[in-house]
Image 1 (cartoon, rainbow, N blue to C red):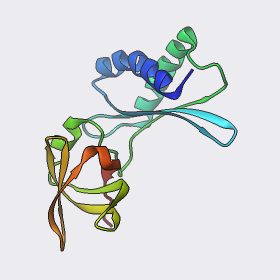
Image 2: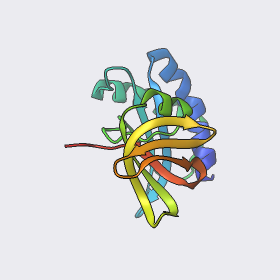
Image 3: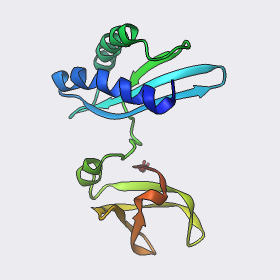
Image 4: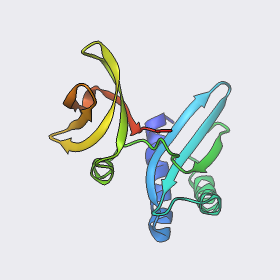
Length: 154
């Protein structure tokens, strides 16, 4: 079964668990790394996700995946927090994290650059608005973006 299909089925199975617990689904990845396959589910909640939260979701989801059995090969199931450099994927993420520092990685260069970092202004007409130091306000079309994530400042 294809990657997107596995991710879609997994989303349908995990969403009721997350809604019951008031957790947010951040992302799902099904990928091969070396000889192994990994199904990763990233979850969050106000105040942050705990190891116990991840374990609870993992155990319940594992049972549901065993019943439906959408993955023919062996795989590792991982449920975790999205981390400090959380990806921004949903429209609501761009609203929620306005004013935060973000990093945008592009598929192709704009002005000879593939990576931009600055303050998230928002999402408008499918363009990510970002205020970049020494450049100013930029609007980057979402279809040109490979990854948008919170930037970590130390």
